[in-house]
Each structure stands twice: as C-alpha cells, then as structure tokens.
Amino acid sequence: MKKLVLLCLFIWTAGSIFGQEISVVEKRTAEKVPFAQPFALQFVLSHTPGYQVTLDEDSLSSDFEITQVSSAENSPGTLTYDFTAIPFVLGKSTFTVTFDLTQEGKTVAQAKEEVFVDVPRVKTFDDPNLREIRPPHVPAGWLTWLLVALALCALAVTGYYWYKRLQAKPREIAREQDTRPGNVIALSKIDALLDSGLWENQQYKLFYITLSDILREYLWRQFHVDASSDTTAELLRRVKTMPQMKPLMNQLREFLSSGDLVKFAKAVPSEQIRDKDVTLLRQIITETAPKELAPLASKEEA
Image (cartoon, rainbow, N blue to C red; front, side, top):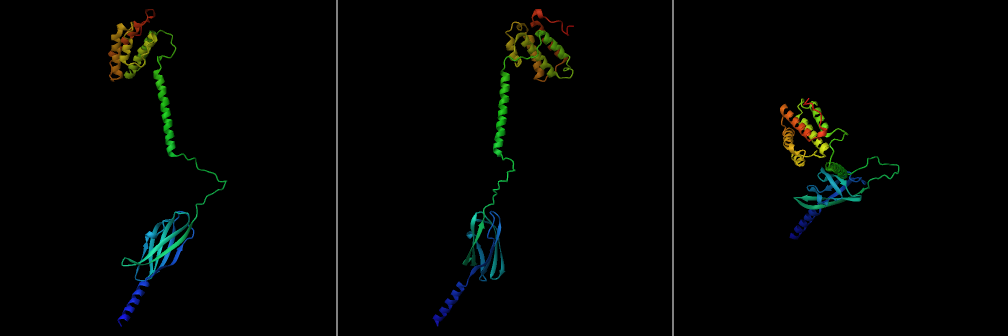
C-alpha cells in the first residue's frame, strides 16, 4: 500500500513538472527590410496558465536596435509581444529572442525563436546622364585657414610698405616745384596760415601743427636738414651745431615748447601767445636766411 501511494505521488509530480510549457505559435514580420529603417515584429505565445512570461533581453540580437517593446495578454494562456527594431547589418540578419516562463521568480521553461530578415544594400545610381548639381564643397577648416593666410599676407605687405617709407632718408617734405628761396616760401606760408581761418575756427592744434611744419620745411629747403619726423629734443640736437642756428637756439626752443603744449597737452593759447610764436618763427627764418636773399617786409611789418 505504501509503495502504491509513492508511485501515485511521483506520477503527479512529474506531470506537474513536464506540464509547464511555452511556445511561439505565430510570428509576423517583413522578409526584406531597408537598411536603418524601423520595422515591426510580432510573436504570439501559448503558455501554461497561471505562469508569467518575461522577455530575456540578453538574448536579443546585436544586429538590431530595439526601439520599442510591448506585450498584451489575449487570454489566460496566450500572449502577444510586439517589437519595433532597426537593422544595422547588411545582408541576411537573424533576429533572435527568448521568452521565459517563470513562477515566483524562477524560470521553469523557455521558448527561443529566430526570424531571418534580408537587409539589402542602399540603392545607387550609375546613370551616366546624371550630373552633380550641388556646389563644390570646401571644408570649413580649410576655408578658415585660407582667409587667415590671406590676412597675414596683406598685413605683411602693408607693414613692409610703411617700413620702407619710414626708412627712406632724406624724405623731401615739399614735393611741389617752387623755385623761390626757402625763406620766401616759409614767410608766405605763415601769411597764408594766418589767413586760413583755422585760428578763428578754434582749430588751435591744427594751426600749430601747420606752423611747426613750416619750420621743418624751411630747414629742409634752406639747409637740407630733414627734421620731418623729429621730436622737439631730436630737432634741437640736430641743429645746435649749425652756425646759423646757434645764436637762435633759445628762440627755437621757446617756439617748439609752446607748440608742444598745444599739440600734445591740449593747451588753449591766447592771441598774444600766437603772435609771440609767429614772431619767433619769422625771426628764426629771417635771421638764418642768406643776406643777399633777404625777403621783403612781411605782412606784419607792413
């Protein structure tokens, strides 16, 4: 009697174990799918009621990127799984998936399924009548370097031009052909400056710049001393050894210092200071001019 009970218990247990089943009864998918285009797959499963069906994500094929997974229970013993996948391998690819039948977290059965999908190559056109209508493509990096190179070349040419221009010595200040003596030209330019209206328009800085340029031009015409780019200190050092200028160094220093205050310190001179500076410049020009070329009385002496 005891043996009969054990035999019945064994048969019941074996039936319970081997009766737990899961299988794929239907699958739907396209046979040919374009490269990198999403497509749908559907699996209908039949399983023993009372158990749970889960997806083994590690079993999914690496040839596809799964973008969406959903499941729906049709009845106590049937279940539908839907996938959206993107193929990234050309040619024949295999979509593999495994479903687990579980109870209380333990897997009691599995259903593994394979689906073969053909992923064709991207279509190309070899028609000789086709022509390229897109503009030439120039990489952005090369275009940037090209513009930088052109800018550097332009900067180098400009720098060389100004370097040669500044290095050219002596530089003739007055390029116009004027056959009059240097002192006559200088005194006439002083008269023209006084009549120019610069002083009346309160353009004091420009007035004194022009007055200083008259002196520098006179030094070039009369003594061939190019002081066009000299500072006050440099000009004084240049002419202090000249016999004609030596007696007038104090007047020259006073004239140049007064002009520097207006040009660089933005001082506003009075008419008395202007007249004094004009008189100093006339004196320097008149007393250094050759005696045989002494000019006629200036406007101020008339």
